[in-house]
Length: 361
Image 1 (cartoon, rainbow, N blue to C red):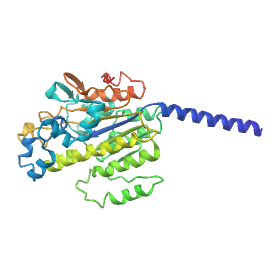
Image 2: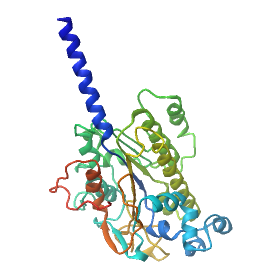
Image 3: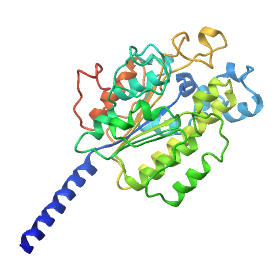
Image 4: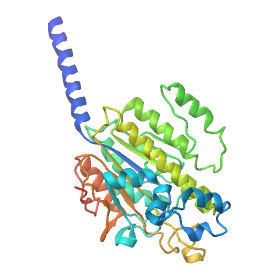
């Protein structure tokens, strides 16, 4: 009887080890969004018209930090990780000056509909027409992965905006979501305890959006401890600074977010669990205007703002063909979800997703 019990225990352990080994061989994905960042900022660097406008407080400082001798130099000064790493080791889509177009399919052109499109693979203008805290009836790719045998319990989401528990529908999906000013929970390390204490001791600029540095480090600590295979991180400062007409802070925040993403990439490339088996997919939920007129106002986005439907996409990972900056193409935001599922080797339900995955190989 004891021998049989011992054999059973050994078989259970071997089965568990086999499943864990299979999980480790399956790809990892970090889906990252930067709220309301325009394609112009990514591909052309600082907007000199906005720099010279009343939206900028310290023109001399911003000029020194972000204006180079060429467009290429300016964009590299603003987003060095994008242009020194992603452009050289992956793909960048959305430079409309080169005929590379990435567009939303939803007609709302603000955050909840944009994130729903990114995370579900289709627009839902009939049901999602506000940023209200309503639980999403649609199933996101995070929920789909968390319902699978391979990725169950290996999915997590972090956001600066406090609406993400509703967009992801954490109650139904079972996906752990830390967003807004939520504290880290569970068996906390000292850094997580410190972050819990500090996030509201730091300046609270917006009650619904915490500073991105806290979102980043909550995510990074969780990743280091739990090794999730699918992680969603949404940085939010850029959109709120833009709504406030604070071009200085918008630019500085965009540069800082680029550095946070670089920090995360450096970590995964030096961690044996993630190294050479991890993809980064980076995008935005909507664009915004480019000027001062109401129909193209830089501080705004939405159905009445020209250009708010224009987005962009970056992808970096082990099997991504190195093509750098794309040209002459048409992609759509609803292609991100099926692309992510294809990377994870998961079945794509064509009844729920109308778009084809992006061919990045």
